[in-house]
Image 1 (cartoon, rainbow, N blue to C red):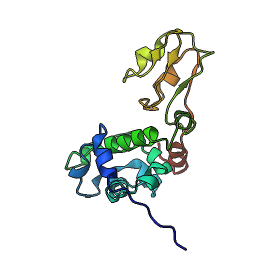
Image 2 (image 1 turned 90 degrees about the vertical axis):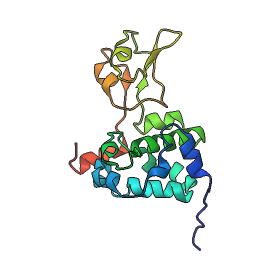
Image 3 (image 1 turned 135 degrees about the vertical axis):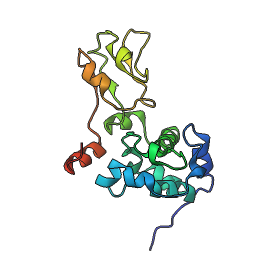
Length: 186
């Protein structure tokens, strides 16, 4: 017997209520984002236009529990090509925040998926290099004088990992990076 598809009619409103999701209804599904997306070129299942369609159809459970949600590399190639200035990268970020809020993914799983860097506290020497080099001011020094990275805001760019003189920050390779590398994409 076929599995029944569960829909949540309020899902698009939930996405639009999140920072970054407010332009969802401006999308008229032209596909410019899908055409330029390097991830969708290597991973055909990741299609920004289809993901927007899933949001509008209320397929919250299916999308929030899917690994597709974490394939966006955050390159923002989709932003300048959108004639409606929708910003798919921002929408996928809003959906990712919902997945975290609703417990579809944990902070630990994001680190394991390679979508956030993590400080190995016992190796951190509190040199402040990560704090200085992060363009988004994400690493902070906690009350114990050790660097911490907020998983929810980390962009997984790897700058802090590359610059940490103590090699105290790790970032696992993500599945989308593995798939892109297998296709010969940078």
